[in-house]
View 1 (tube, rainbow over the protein chains, first blue to last red):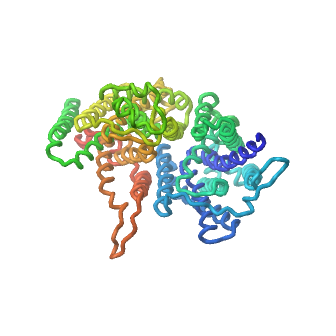
View 2 (tube, each protein chain N blue to C red):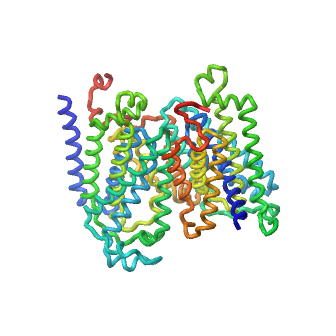
View 3 (tube, rainbow over the protein chains, first blue to last red):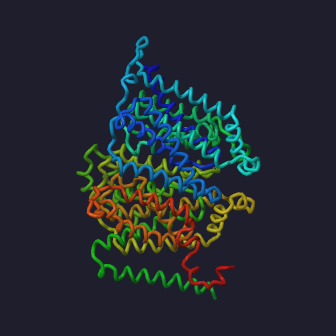
Length: 294
Length: 343
């Protein structure tokens, strides 16, 4: 029973982690809470749904469609809505982000309907493995493994490539980066692309595990993922993963052992958020942006 | 000399509004009165929301949470014990819930008081650190209030909400409290505290260097807006006569955000102008949600299209007309000569 819940928590936490990485990277380079990030995850889930159910693509092709589509959407949102406001007061940027978020939710609601639709999960992922009394759905096993692989790729890009070096430099000082002959805007767009692609993978995992899509599903998940990013330490990719796992575990464990609190499960992430802001605002692995960066 | 002139402009505006309220009931039909009531309540909310977002420059998404608290407190105090007896269909309410009863003024004041207390509790984790945590914490707060309203039927009657709230709100109450709210907020903005809030907005480091207690300025702004949002929620409950958790979702906050952005962040006059435009425009735009005819084709009804248009308007204002209609100007600035405003 205990091991079973551990695996479920690990799987849920990995999904939060994937989405939290996007928040943390965008916050790192722009100091912007990208409210639309959760909705980009929703778009990823929807594109996967269209790929499988409407276009009748094989599952992996649908996943690819979702990743590419979401990455393009993330980059477009930066190009259209955020880039013209680089020198504007921060509050304008935040208001625009809320506008983009509300636009995506309602546009999908109007044109595709607000009713949750069942997601046709490929049968391979619905298989259930048995190990000495444990029953593990394949999807619960694949999610953490894929998350670990994607995390490795992201860390490699950030710390071993020139683009990664530019991204880390942007978190220090945008003006100096520009003076060094690096096109800061292009790097920021790449960050949006990477974050959105990860969010799309998270969205696909989400619709496979809770097999339905609806236009509002990104709101709460996005909020929790942001809380995860702050708990782990905003600006740090490792922190985002840690925060995601902590919040995922808490949700699963509390519901498993105290089922009467089930109705309040969506509130846990915020209790964590408030506590971390009170006692260690930089987060567990965090960087104090006011004192030093990275 | 100019001070006197400013006062005359504001005073004549206030008397104009009082006169309008006085004659409105006999001139307009019920539908128009309802819209006017909405405008008055949203003026209270917009002017106070503008205090934290526009004047203090702290991006916050709290109104739906505090309005919900105000509405529930007022509803619990106004619904008579007999009416409560048969409303609680999910579970039996706590005995103290049944015995709660108060008159309208006490209910409104308590609504504001509870909202202020919660704002005070929230401001400690949020304003102690730099950054935009207020936005995300208040956004989450709105969700949590809704979760509690649904999962705590012993008090709130769960998703069924509370009904049969006596309809105390009328144009005298809503308009009168709107005038009080506007005057209070204007006095705060023009006081020592208001200047501290603007300093925090324009440059927090410089404000700290000048000895401004930024934590106090932010907390004061946040708690003041929470108070009026609580009161506004109470008025709304007594206007609608029935409330449920779904009423206070994020769209509520989003409307107020458009109002203050359209009017001009930081301008109280702008918040009032924005309220009138958005509340009126939102009635007018109802046609968007219904089937439309284009060159003989009929498009199907698209409920929610209004919200898409609203979000596009918000993005466009931010990208192309960030100052909104009024910028940071107030009513009195409009009557000043070119020379003075250029100074």
